[in-house]
Image (tube, rainbow, N blue to C red; front, side, top):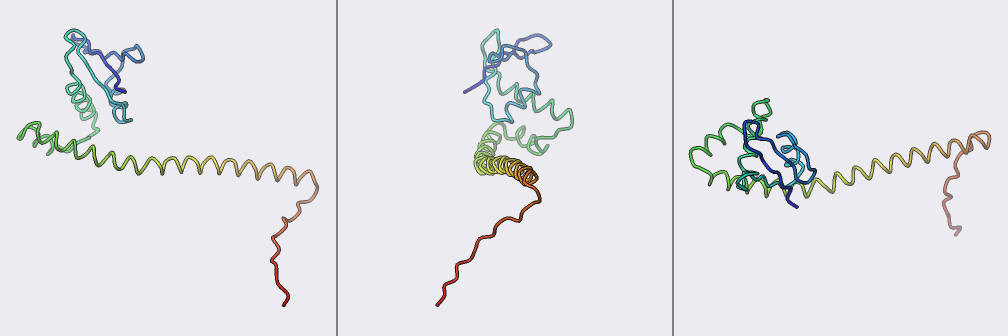
Length: 151
């Protein structure tokens, strides 16, 4: 689902998130995009799509803060060759990143599941220690007997 943001004119260029019914910052917009949220930014007066301009503004603000997202050579190529270079490059990056995300998500899910299992195992061990403590001295656990055939 695409999140609709309305941009109000004037010097402040305020951004209004219609989903949460509140004003948002460029930082929030950048976080949403990094988290995979699709956005559409429209000018509140003209209803013109200003998504590309707003996202470029997000990049500019991050560059100003020293968070370099893209190499300066890419900006040189974009200016020299126009949007064609960028659109082809972005498409290739999206394909690669999409593929990587598909590979990383199952690993993240497995790691989360392992953390839950570790916590549950720790709880179980604590419970067993308490039970063994109530029953006097700690008894060694029974070992599995090997079955030997007598021939």
